[in-house]
Length: 248
Image (tube, rainbow, N blue to C red; front, side, top):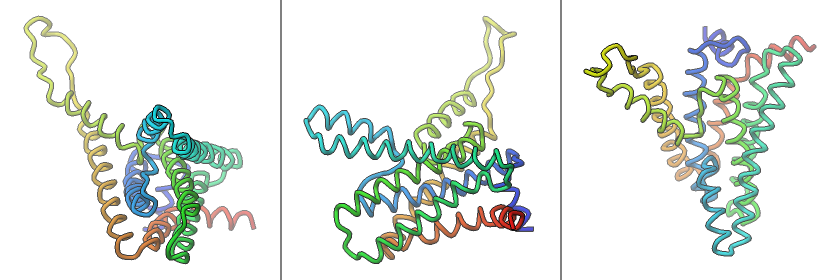
């Protein structure tokens, strides 16, 4: 039963239920990576709106080095999203069961690399922290793009601003007073309760993941990335192994 569920969760044959469950898991991982990563490098790595605003401030203040740091962070996020598109389309053209697994497999490998390098250095130097910042931005772009492609741009896991905006829209529709004396035959305004539940769950999982990531980094340092990497490996293991068996 767990094997069938996991195969369905990351497989090529998609359903709304599978998309929801996968999004919740990825939101938890994104929250843990973003919050724990902030304690590690003092930068949020999924918040591109903030990065772009900081770039504008740095340019106005003449802080060219900070401007370039923000630009490279945004470029890393963009490159991660592009990498997901290339990996998924490569697997799709070869009709692999693991077409959606490759980006998550790469993300898992990167999280393991962060954990091992950070734990071995003890007191990371500035160049290592800069590299980790770029790789975390790359990882967040990688992950956000995979659920975007799977759900046809209906779900995000790292773009919390958009999720909160959509919650506000659905709440406005849900609370709208439909009675009208001018146009009694006008269209009804109805909120999507299922969508509202999903969006609220994504916020909750991102926050829970962030809390666990912050506590994890506080008590075990860079090793907190390892459980997140293990979760991703569990997700992608079954379709990847199936493709490897067929290949041999």
